[in-house]
Length: 315
Image (tube, rainbow, N blue to C red; front, side):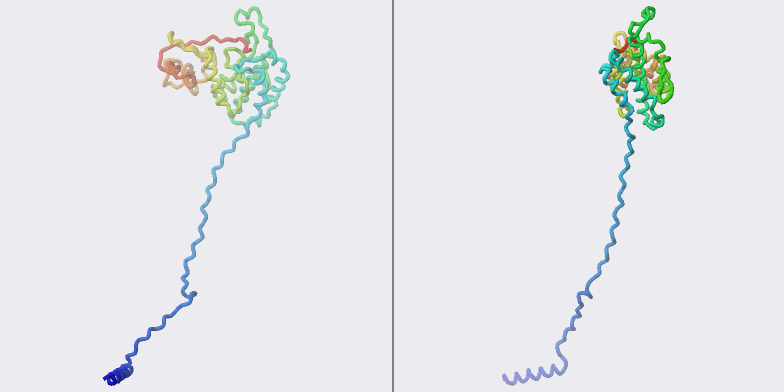
């Protein structure tokens, strides 16, 4: 049986081979080289750098005007912190003062024109105050007549005849008097009423002289300080709450400097019972007074009086 089975299996195998029933051969897999299979990726476009925003150009600051420093030695050496002037010792510096006035005369007008507005205002305030010192020294000690002493004390500047109108000086090759400076620059060109708290009339009731020059870069602060300092004096401002009276410096009268405040401060929302020039002054000074005084001025009924001006020399 075993032999017959083997023969049968062998025969069957031969028949199958002859019938083509051979096992399928798998086709060879086509292989590609590395070069053939490399996938080319799209090249990234070069990134454009973002345009840098230019930094905003800072406006060029004009160079500081150094001319005002020429006045510093006189003011710091001979004017006290309270505005009193040492005329006795300043008299020995008359030649120095004359040289300083020559500096005002020799200033190139083209240089002046290029200055900022604040420096121009500072220049004329310094010129006014220096010239006032020179006029006082020309008449120091002040001589008075017996008749005039009936009206003013012996050391009053009212004994100096023509102090504002007769004494002439030269600035940038042009002739001026103190009165002409007031009219042309302080009353017209600059329209800055705080200036009237900076020019000194060499008297006790005047706004005090600073022991430093005025500078364009600090002008606003200096002028504000002058106003506050002046109004803090009983010679300039006082409220009598019991009598319902407000007393103001004589220089704030409409016929003196009071009308110079009208262009900026004569608004009619407050102080409607007062004339425009007085209303303008009240509107102005409320920016510099303590809150309780402002409240009184704005809401109470009162009359205005002007304090008698003291013309005694500021020494």
